[in-house]
Length: 541
Image 1 (cartoon, rainbow, N blue to C red):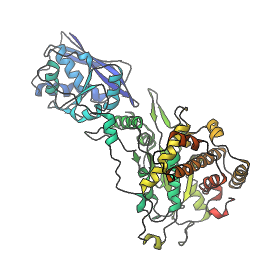
Image 2 (cartoon, rainbow, N blue to C red; image 1 turned 120 degrees about the horizontal axis):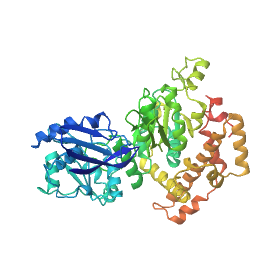
Image 3 (tube, helix red, strand yellow; image 1 turned 120 degrees about the vertical axis):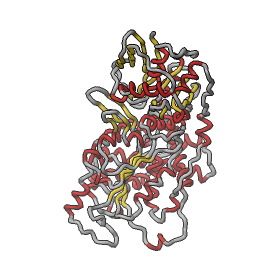
Image 4 (tube, one colour; image 1 turned 30 degrees about the vertical axis):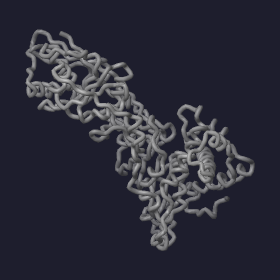
């Protein structure tokens, strides 16, 4: 008797349906076919034990189990449950009272028959709804993750026996329901840190505001103890909240990587990833023998913070060049090609030299000029060009550290950032895949970042003096566009526009880039290689 159950395989961050065919024939053997990896082939031992412990018997028949499509690699132990159900039904130990073709069934079996959590339930549930499945049966630890998908009945089960009772009609179960929009709207963005706790560093705070408003990459260079890591941890507090589409995409990535906690639903805060500098290229970009998203994909729609930037291996840093431009990474291997999203905001920090005190206002640097240059050369010119804002950070004087005056709260900065992003969202409404100034291409730069003759002359002089590249030219214009948008956002909010109207935002779209916007954007490039260590006063603006 041939029985078909249905599961799914994850490729990248999406799922494809897998048909598990089980047939019982005369003989005594077990054959599992369909390009299964070792974990799937080992399901034979787990299923035998789970059936025995649940009160069933392994059939003394020739069992053939096929995982279709046969040319797609199947990985992991999540096929245990559909294989067990197929075996029981094909040898007529159970008689399903519900149509098996209406349910997607996935779960790992323990030796005692209990169900263990699996990875990738959210993309599986999305595919199940897309293909018209009535419901999905998963381990109880994954049920809230799958229930995020509307118009799909998701049942959480704790054991093989419970699944069999439901399928045969011996017991009833209620699907778990999650109102995605209500859950998303109710989610609280409460952080345990705030920019008001940072003493001084007003210039660096301003650079962070510009970076978040336009989605720009930023590099901080300064001595140990200046507050680089402290401020980087506070970036999520001023970023705009995730949209529902971004939240679903982000949750999918973390579900595939197995990073969601048991009972998790929808991610409502932007991810913040901070890998150690000993990370390997594969761990950063993704892939491996069992393909999984890397840190740049786990940081999608959020922040990737690289502390001690030059200490990362050269190979690790160079593999980021393409994702920084294209906002996705393609993992190409001999047997597969997988595409992962990688739309992250890069935040990096570094010491100015090996000893850490080059250009320090009070401490003497012990490094030679050659040592300082060699340390900086660990970051290639092309990679440095892809970082829009490069700012120096200096230690805070004692008077400011001891001051009782509280700085501006993250919430106030966040309001300006959100308003600036709303201006950009309206500006790029007709552009597919473009949501912020940092994503503008050359055509959009000509349209929305044109400058007058005075500003052009200032830019020409600065680029000649600093010997900047063409890529740096584009970055400067993008940052200047963001600074102009922030100025418009500040004016809107100052006028009492807590909820800006579409008309107000449309007027802000056409606001020109002035010379002072361009000058501020240029000041964030004073760390370019040819002018390392110069102060802002030495620059031509």
